[in-house]
Amino acid sequence: MKFSSQVRFVEKWILLTLIAIFWLLTTQVSLANPDYYAQAGSNQQNISQDIYLRNCSSCHIPLPAQILPTESWQKILNSSQNHYGVALPTSVKVSANFIWIYLKNNSRPSVVGETLPKYVSNSRYLKALHPNVQLPKPANHNSCQSCHPLAQQLDYFNVGEL
Ligand code: HEC
Ligand code: HEC
Image (cartoon, rainbow, N blue to C red; front, side, top):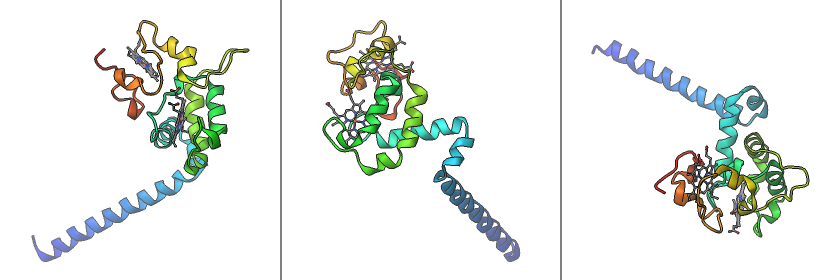
């Protein structure tokens, strides 16, 4: 390679790197802007699910939205100061809107008059999602992984050895 073409080669890579940095910066900025989510359609779903995963998977496996009625999730999010006896970190409050989008879009409302389940084991959706499955007793967040090996990634579609 001649010196001049080497320079052009280096210039090209510098330019590409700058474009990449610019792209990263602009997408990061738009991630902080809620309007971006409003326009993003199904992207919004992926992003809110990702934010749910980040915020709700550190102390126990991330529980899937389908497992509790929408109103139960609403109560859980509204009582972040006393979450089953512990206080949730501030980051959960900051991300609450996105966590809510994931939970709301993927759960079903309760039936009128139904006592809202606080625990998965009291939820009729747990039974509805497992019509022919012999679930352990009690079936709580500790037992999901025995059959859903990828539960930590919020993947409940994969079912391991039974
Ligand atoms: C700081 C730790 C912590 C974080 C973060 C956390 N939880 Fe929990 N969560 C707990 C504890 C402790 C329990 C009670 C576990 C038990 O009784 O075995 C619990 C229980 C639950 C249960 C009931 C589980 C069952 O087996 O029925 C649900 C539902 C739940 N959390 C949802 C969430 C959601 C949604 C988030 C994110 C917004 C979240 N948690 C984040 C600590 C946490
Ligand atoms: C004994 C094994 C077993 C346990 C324990 C178990 N599951 Fe499942 N789960 C299954 C099987 C098998 C299916 C598929 C059922 C079907 O399609 O009829 C399933 C399906 C599901 C689905 C639907 C997945 C989809 O995308 O179609 C969800 C959500 C789910 N389980 C969540 C949970 C949660 C949350 C827990 C823990 C509280 C749990 N499961 C515990 C075996 C289990």
